[in-house]
Image 1: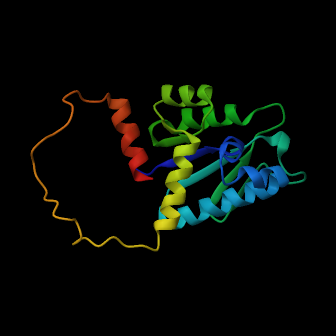
Image 2 (image 1 turned 180 degrees about the vertical axis):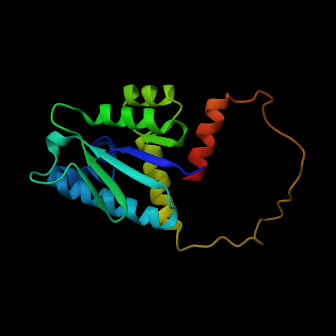
Image 3 (image 1 turned 60 degrees about the vertical axis):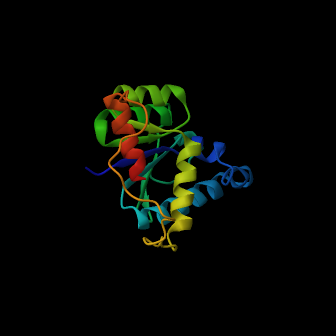
Length: 173
């Protein structure tokens, strides 16, 4: 099952350490930087990625939907917030969706539809790590004496089904 990553664009940009200063200079610079890093990430992992921005802050005379470097970009319509678009997409995609937002209302709504969620800081860390580690290969022989065992360790209590599915989707990032 492939994952559809749905990103709350301005939420990620404004809470990001990397993109925040670009957004202060120009909103377009922040959007372009985000799209560039997502395009680099998409080369590594071929997940479908959609970034949703508020249409009120969108570029004038442009279409509400666009595809740049393999990343789907959508601007909400006038009178509609990006949050409502994200909630609608999470409702349509259900278990295929992974919603990236730190807005509690969006996260709770998406989780109620069965979509996995991740906050913006954790997602930013995962994509930057993946992009930076793309050129490096880990040597399989160098495991410092670690041996595989079948002995079980850890808590006996199992996570809920929703949390297990969420964890699986996040591991695929």
